[in-house]
Length: 162
Image (cartoon, rainbow, N blue to C red; front, side, top):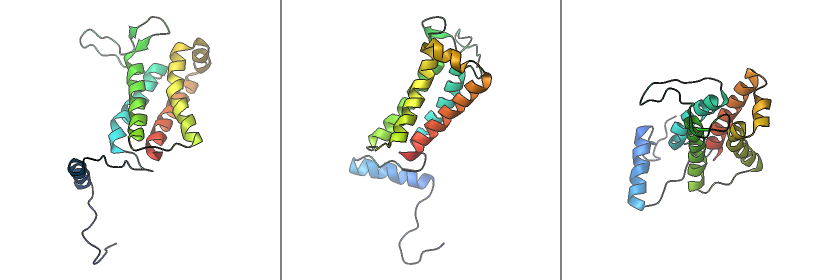
């Protein structure tokens, strides 16, 4: 649809990003994050969170041999089932990034959004540190897969709505 006499056309794509950066640099005020669309600042975290959650839950494993690291699931601290691993740290950092960037523009969460944040933040650490929860989730591979998909959906929804 073409609008006549209204002014210059709305900038699209990279032009909009550059104009936002310039306006932030000129005014010194942060731009308001988008509501009801995924913030582009969250895209990296939205890529890391599902992969890290699936690795912690044992849906799949990633083995690499660089700098003496044979598996990303090797514990950094601890041993056995209650171990802090690289995917766990990446998972918590990614979710923290998503919620943190939402808080920068003053978010106003509804009750179901707070429940999703709680579900996303607590499910994977509970799987690692609470053996009863790990046994419940570990009953079937399908349950672990569904939990990983639910965490992914919760992370995207948290980024989307705020």
